Length: 553
Image (cartoon, rainbow, N blue to C red; front, top):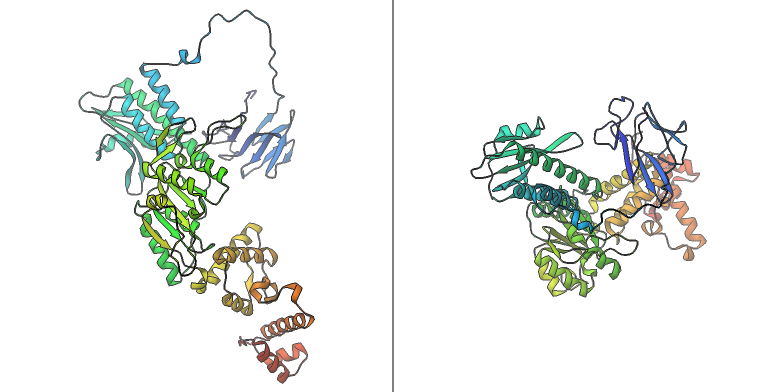
């Protein structure tokens, strides 16, 4: 009661100890209840799907709300009042007693300097994998160890996320148990372990070992500090990591499953992979699928569209230094350190950038915004379109880039070669759209399904996805008839060229098909519904090439 909190760019309120404002004892508060965000338009509160809601001036927040000075924000049993910003008054005073360049105040030697350098290095880590590797390197340097490692628990035991100084590692189990289960630093002779932790919970172990000199209590304390710093750096990288792209693949056709099996086998290796196929076949989706099933799945997946304008693409790939009003931009090569760089549409990359990218991949280096280079451990997956008929399987690339991307090539089949997957794809994408709308799945009529099977799908899976999503929005929970399909799929001529006779014929065909469905395929009943004779109905069924399927009475 009476506490004051200063809100920066972002502030999370919740019951979790990791929150910026932790309401630990309030049972009406969710673990992560609400978030305060400072934007150009002012201060906003965003409800994070809390169980009991977030209230501003007594009204429940639906999504987010803008706050102004004097507003009352209620979270559980806690009430926050937004104060106006404090103004700083400038006064005249005597000249400062001491002054000097800021570098003179930075620690230059000793443990303080080592911890300062370690913290700066961990803050600069671009991914969880890079932070863990930097933590192991700093632990080895700070404790003068022969080997250091960051260990993470898994279903089959502990796995080494980063090891420095050795190719093999033997770790005493009691040290791991003390660090991870009891969240304590522990030493055993010349070896020591400390928890990697943030927000009150440990998620891994920082381990060091050296030849002869035992690890003392003071050094164990330094290792514990480093474990906390490394844990916070990893958590920060996780918070900044963009959401993983959807990597669910749908299809049971033999040709497509062969492609998926090739991608799975490639995921288990480390070689560069080039996916080539027609536009819309799902090459980028398969690239994400490969990353998600590789040993780099916990590290970043950085996607670069190589068909972007050249100036934008150059900044995205190679970064840029800070400019007036704009922070420096880290290159995609640096952001993908420890993970996968997915180059979408690599055949659209300008040739001058192709040579520059090829050299960076060969050297396994990433340019830094302030100049110079840093090593980058990444895997490259690229996609490209096929060549014109009669040409090579894939589009040509600049020779140096083609050499840098040499590895496994996988051809992705077009949708017309796996048409048995059409119903699965329609239900999957229409189902996704329907769930977002809170609606029911649309159903394809037999005639509509036949037309979709007969259509060539030049846009491949991308075109099918757009069609399914559109029908889910326009016909939620309804039966999709022929007239509801896009004109190109239904075989209807363009509006400009459609005559009155064409329109009448189309309407008549759809009416007969609908009557046959309502009559469950019984022609006498369908003719009665239409008000025509049975012979006339037979003639029209033959003329329109309609299929008649008998259903249960």
